[in-house]
Amino acid sequence: MAMVQLGLPPGLTPVMEDLVALRTSRQVARYEPDARTISLYLDRLAPGAPVELSLRLKARGRVRTSGVESRAYLYYAPEIAAAAPPVAVAVN
Image 1: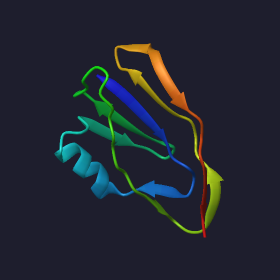
Image 2: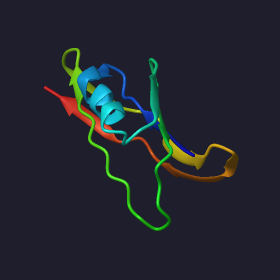
Image 3: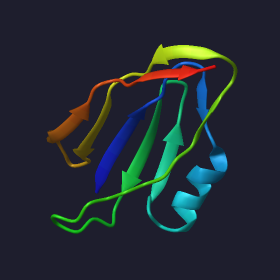
């Protein structure tokens, strides 16, 4: 099983319907949103195959910020990991 922790920029919240759709379609086994990240549990991975997920975020107002680091790792071997730096976001 793989874990993906998506960093959420302050002022943005996930569209919950998108998370439910990812779970219903079995693209993710489970999800856990909190104030700074969304944890996604992926249990249907094929070696070498790319994984593409779609998730919308909704701004609570005007915001100019960057999120926190996002990372992916194997649940039972967290030393096997990859990370992505925060991305700048501006909502006018």
